[in-house]
Length: 179
Image 1 (cartoon, rainbow, N blue to C red):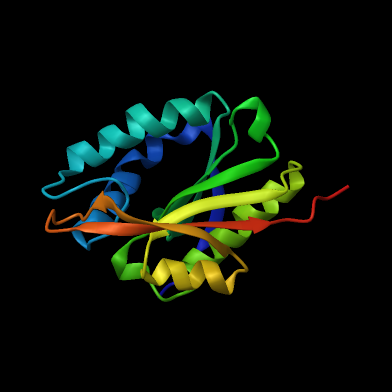
Image 2 (image 1 turned 120 degrees about the vertical axis):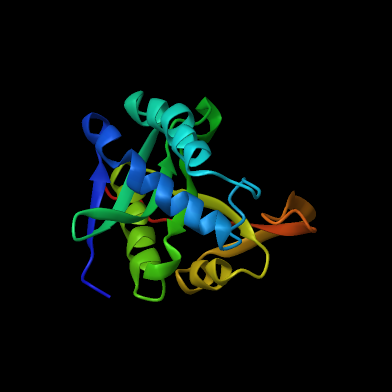
C-alpha cells in the first residue's frame, strides 16, 4: 500500500472530500461493517449521511473529523465527538472509524486512533468512549490501544446484511490530561 497522510478535515474543505468519504462508508458497509447502515446502501445515501449528519456538526464545532489520505484521496476516517452534555465534558466519543477495505492492515486505523487520543488529551479530556460490534477486528485494535470493556449489550444492532442482531461492546480509555 502507498504511504498515507493523516489530517484533520476542516469545515471549509468538507465538500471537496464528500465523494471520497461516501466511497469509504459505502465500501465499509458493503463489506459488513456495523456502523449504523444496512444493505442495500447506495453511494447517494452515503454522501447524504456526511452532508446532513456529519458536516453540520463539524462546522458547528461539535465534532472533529480526521482522515487518512493516500495520493490525495481519503481512504479512512474517524470522528471525535466533543460537544457533549455539560456533565460529560470531561470525555469524548470516538465514532465511525472507517478504513476502506482495500486499505486495511496497513496501520491506518491505529494511526487514526492515536491522533484522536492525542487531540482528546490536548483539549483536556480525560476519558475516551466508543462502541464496536462484539468480536470485530476493531475490538482487538481498541484493546491493543489500552481500551477496556465497560459492558456488552446483546442483540444491540441489526447486521448490515440484515440477517441477525449483533452484540455491541462499549469500551473506554482513561487518559492523562496535559497541563
